Length: 382
Ligand code: NAD
Ligand code: ZN
Image 1 (cartoon, rainbow, N blue to C red):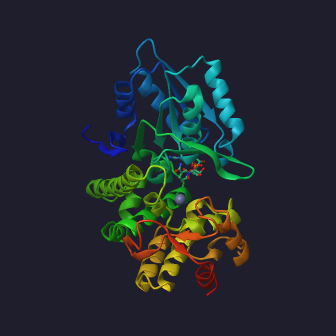
Image 2: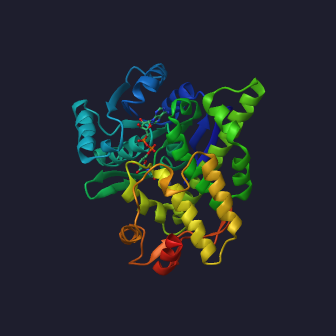
């Protein structure tokens, strides 16, 4: 696999595979290395089907043995598909098609498809293998890695789910060309978060690399050499993020401590999201959460002011909001935000837990830190 970067996950080699123009590679690897499969089922959404389903279908079809079947299922796009009803509809489809335990589900899409198909795979016939083909930046650097699967209910997001690890995660960066700009920025929030907690050097590269990322995504540049450099740059950024998350998950699969580091910006970000969604995307709420949690770190005397400044500039550079009025005139009040944080799944009792920065690239502890409400209120009302 020469033009493919491979990353191990949970001590299994080659689980994550990253590169450009991977459709044929995916089909070959899938059919060669995942054993005892009679049925492959590609599940995708209405947005992605016209763009990529045909080429994936043709590639896999050309590698199948005569005893194997390839089925497809197209679902409505959007968070609404992460529901009990849609989960049941996939299960009914699989049962109608006489799929049994030798079925491999393939999630082609963003985090919505990944979470949903992963959940179906974890309980269908007591668990069947599944493969992630993440198509958003957020799904590549975050949701496809780690084995968390879930659906939503009217009581909240992700309240019902399982841990179920994909057998492969194929990141075909060519698909980012069609990703809407706002969705790209949404994923960049997780990229910036990852480097802010893990590597000053990688963070500094991001601060200088906007034009390279742009040319890689648009698939164009002034010269072929610059285009290749841009593509290599984007591949390095995504590989570094994926490798960091894979390493954290390998050390702490079920989130005992270390995995909690990935929640930098999310204690506040999730609370903002509860009030600003669906007008604001997850990454946009996290952008504000990152800034305010860095301000909290500064307020508590753990990080220099320059860390806040660098974080803000970098988020702004990648088209993320740094003020609440950047594109919403909803007024956010302190007390509902504090109330929302009380019911965070990650709390220990009423104690708020926040990932505190030491500087760009490192955190105060190897896990979230207990923080008093008073400190949070001080920072949010200043
Ligand atoms: P998404 O899956 O809804 O995708 C966003 C939109 O972009 C969709 O309309 C989709 O059809 C479209 N799209 C996707 N790829 C495209 C492409 N290449 N070209 C054109 N259009 C494309 O959103 P998302 O941000 O990827 O995922 C959000 C979901 O992920 C949420 O449900 C969230 O709870 C979940 N999530 C899960 C984890 C986890 O650990 N399991 C982590 C973070 C987020
Ligand atoms: Zn997130």
